[in-house]
Length: 329
Image 1 (cartoon, one colour):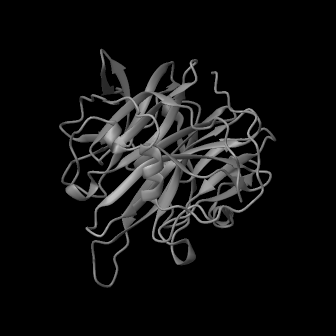
Image 2 (cartoon, helix red, strand yellow):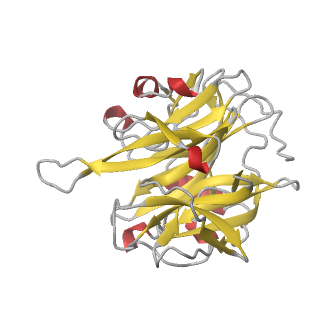
């Protein structure tokens, strides 16, 4: 699809420090302004919000989007549904399965579709009987009706993503939290088959160091095998300001699985690159949760994303973030 992602130079030197989100945002805003995105329209969900979508994928002889569906006033009460577009509106697919998960994702691994999402479960603490825990669960199948659960990630870990590699292995990115990992760092491990997707292996992933400044965090949303064997990563980087407002930005970097080197993180889109709209609450207004890129033949990409935990949108004609990157330790 005209990705133009080879000829990436590798510079084996440590970056001096991981820049803060505010610095990355300044760099992003200093570049040429992006086109304004648009919001996607959904129906058949009884007034509920649809957000944190996937990009369209082809399965069951149709083009489908998976989206997180939730009532505005609810927390930790989501389901992932599958939608098909007709006349500019995305509607639930009759007979398609529904999963009680958050933030669904899909990946073709071999001849199977791997589907996953975040499962929320009661985990009462001393001071809050309503406290919940979460983990990533995985399903596999050849079509929507045959998806069966086969793996569960570690408790407290979101943003686990997979990609088929040129060497026949599967690259897996993780997001451990707590302790020296703070609110979330990114780890990497290779496995030989989906059967190796288990808690022990995921917890042994090697951390990609010096990506996030102190108190900030990020995670992976989608992965792309590039022509030179490296991995293009689309994800999010985030922080909370002094007013307890969360700020999430779409970001990208390139990772070399052979050398464990990565290019510097760059912001590729913000909430301001989409029309103003609804929000789950005021603390979540400045959130963009990227899902995937669709690569155009003209060298640009289309970004699919969740907006303010209440809506979903796309932005077309963006620069390809994986062209001409330098890799750092």
